[in-house]
Length: 251
Ligand code: BTN
Image 1 (cartoon, helix red, strand yellow):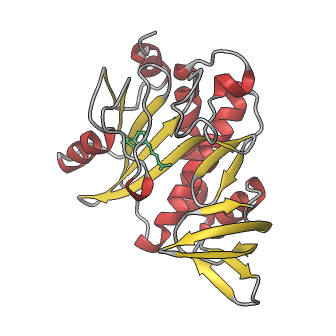
Image 2 (image 1 turned 90 degrees about the vertical axis):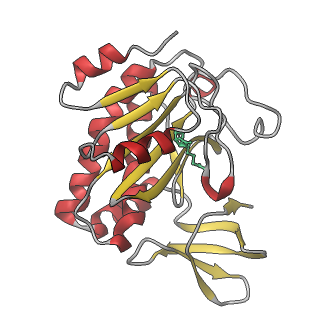
């Protein structure tokens, strides 16, 4: 069913939301909107993307009408080193909204994947564009199956809950949840977001993982987040390494 943008706009009347039937990637649409001076909080989403972008040059599977694929433009008064905290705030909000709407328990894989039953249900991509943050969220909502290359690692809210989930309700819960977590970051600081993330994620400490890092594969146990939100890895050879980007896999 085509996304009911009117229902969403009615529920969130203050919010600028653009919804496209199809696009290359909402990241590019949002970058253009940001450059044209749109307000902070503006959203551009699409029913399907031909060239959905994931992190590290990956694509994002964007089956028409099945998921939520959107980018949110944020103009925040935050020092650049706090950008990772924005990603965490988005993950916390996405996890909370999914639990609220679909009644499912979620996990957060540092730095920014939402998992259900160990499989990825949502990914987040944050980029800088013309003084704004362009935050892309992809959420698998009503997919019944996935292409073979991701079939083993992906899930959707429908697969996990056994029922269709309203994409509109999810977006109506999610956007205010994002505002709430960003307000926590602004008023209580990064420590508060790091604490919330650490509670919500089974990956932050005591987890056996392998980490792919530019060619090298590190093995060890996670040992918390540092003050900037980077993951501390206690390697099996005794050294402690800060993990700056993703690529963390459980063993
Ligand atoms: C990841 O986990 O690799 C991040 C995936 C981000 C996907 C979303 S879908 C909406 C927005 N438009 C894109 O092209 N990518 C993001």
